[in-house]
Length: 486
Ligand code: ADP
Ligand code: MG
Image (cartoon, rainbow, N blue to C red; front, side, top):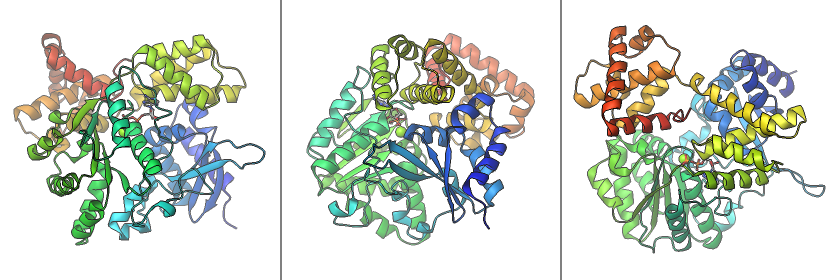
């Protein structure tokens, strides 16, 4: 007799409990239902897409650990998301998503087809009418658009922070390839709606122009596919695949920085698609011109179209977002609570959603209606959790990617100015936002002395006081680490 999913999940919970705080455990793990165990894959049901994203972002490592403990090295985790609670006539609709951890950990069999691999990752659906039945609209069966139906224009709130991006996105969705917004590049910090907007374009096109081949891919996926294609001598196949696309959406192009060979391939695909009047849409976490490590000839291509940004929403827009999300989740929230949340969570929309989901979980657990006190406590809990999630490694990665240097350089003895600059900032942030001692931080920067760390921190503070643009860089990096206003 094999183990059943409840036992396995209960054992997982025991492991998880030792790794996360009481409040986080209650909020994020108690609402989960184990629903199936088959072929070393445990399927757990989570209340919403956001809940899933939050778990993946904050708890993927501990989940992985728990699963491996229970199911061994081949253990996998899959999420089932209830996207429509259903009524008496209809069964609830759910969709299944694999965890990033299990994918990283044990490559799926699709790896033998380098091109199809990452594209198929999200569209693993069970009993769902939620995704369009793709087969009907697709002539080239190998293209799967990789879009999530959760992102559309109707559930995107427009505000001063995103007006131009929103308008451009809508224009492109109506006339892909034939507006002057080609390519369309949307940039901005995390959680500000870039992925949502570009996926909304894709979904809209698929609906109104079903003959168009739409492909959404993160640049991470693009890189992996390219590297696999090179390894397997299938670069031509890889390229041909992309050349069939009418609308290419490539998310988070900052990850292409420093990947010269991949950029070269992208440049080729880009030119070819653009020349044939195909639409290209990209996002980036900073203005393209600041993307160090991206080739000039590629950057100059972006000027052909429109580059625009999304900013942190102002309070009025945040109120609208909270209202809309609460309505979407069927959440009763008094006006004063809506305003309180919108006023106090001013980092980004993702965080705002985090607070709402957390409130929802809390109110259903305690069977209390949401009130101001509950909102205050929740925000405080989430705020308190922030620094705990930061590791030296995470900060090094964030700083390196933002400033366009390599993590190895931060750890090396390289004294080149831009690297020394990045290293100082990274050391400073590690001292501010981790619990590691200066000695430990020094160790993790390739065995540097603790006095180097102390010195770096002081230097950064001094420079930030004296130089506004330096300070702005620092703030931007902090925002990227999501600690800006806390
Ligand atoms: P980014 O790609 O910029 O990091 P996302 O598009 O992933 O951000 O947005 C984070 C979350 O916030 C998503 O769930 C998205 O649906 C939501 N979101 C962001 N901006 C808005 C908005 N203006 N209206 C409604 N939802 C939004
Ligand atoms: Mg995104």
